[in-house]
Length: 219
Image 1 (cartoon, rainbow, N blue to C red):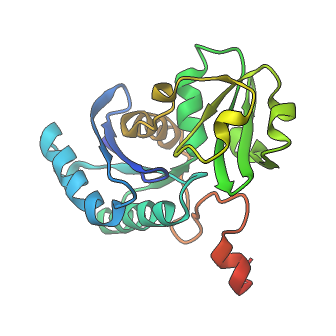
Image 2 (cartoon, rainbow, N blue to C red):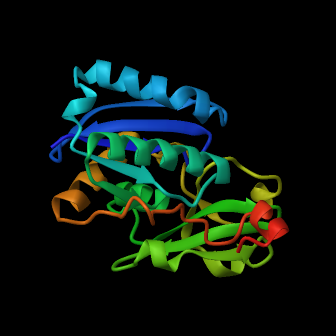
C-alpha cells in the first residue's frame, strides 16, 4: 500500500506518502496560494525523494477543508485526475481531522477554527467521540469567545485581522500545520478499512457558500 496525501487547504502546500504503517516521506512548501503552479512539481519531488513511481501509488487522500476556496478546488482536481489516471481509490479527509489526530494525545478537548470571511469563523469542538466533519459550525467573531470559553483553541491557516483581540487559550501555531504525511497516514487507515469516495460526488467541505456562489446563486 502506497497512499499519496495532498493538502492545499491553506497557504502551505502539504504532500506526503504513507505505506499504512508509517510516513515514508513528506514535503511542505509555503507557496503563498500558488498551489496551481507548484503542486505537480511538488508531487514529482516527493516521489523522487521516496524513490517511488506514480504507478506504485495505490490510493489517494485529499484534504477537503475547511480552507481556501481556490486551494481546495486545485488539490481536489489534481487528486481526482491522478485517481482516475491510475485507477486507484480516493478518500476525502477534513483538514481538521488531520490536525485533531495529532493533538488528541496532548489535549483532553480543544477547538479548531479558521476564518470564513471577515468577522466569521469555522469552529469545531474536538473531543472524545466527536464526528468532526459533521460538527463544524460557523460563528461570528463576537460569539467566538463565548463558544470557546477557557478551552484551548487553535487557528488553522492565515491569521485574520482582529484574531488577537479574541480572548482564548491558544494552541501553538506550529502544532496546527497540516502534514501531508499525516494526511496520507490517516487516508491509508480509512482506505484500508474499505472506505473511499466516489470521484463524481467528492466535493470540498465549504460549510457555507463562497462569495462567488452567493453572488451567482449557485447555492
